[in-house]
Image 1 (cartoon, rainbow, N blue to C red):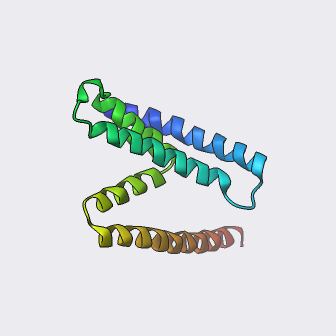
Image 2: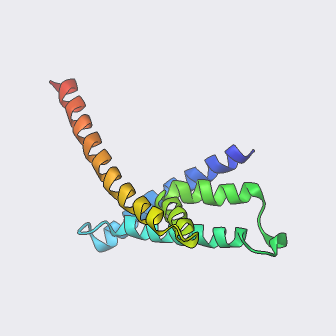
Image 3: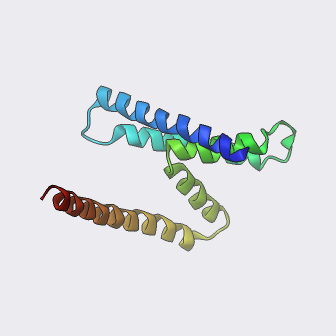
Length: 132
C-alpha cells in the first residue's frame, strides 16, 4: 500500500513541478531558471516541515506512515529531489558532521554537473548515430 501512496504522490508532484515551472517561466522569463528555483525552495520547505513533524515528541497528531511516504517520498520526490538532498544535508549538519555535509554539497553539485554533461554528450552521440 505504501508503494501506491508513493506513486500517487510522485505523479502529483511531477505534474505540479511541470505546471509551476511553466507558469513561473511564462511570467518571469527564462533568463534564470526561476521556476526550478521556486520548486526547489518550496519542496525543501515542505519536506522540512514534515521532517520536523516526524521528530515531534507528541506524535498523536502525526499523519501515518503512508501519508508521510506520500508527502516526503512521493509528492516532494516527484516535485523535486533537491528537497531530499537538502534534508539529508541538514541532518548531517545537525549531527555535527560538517565535513560530510560540505562533501555532500560539493560532490552532489560537481558530480551531477559532470554526469549531466557526459549524458548530454552521450545523448548527442546517440542522436547523431541514429540520424547519420
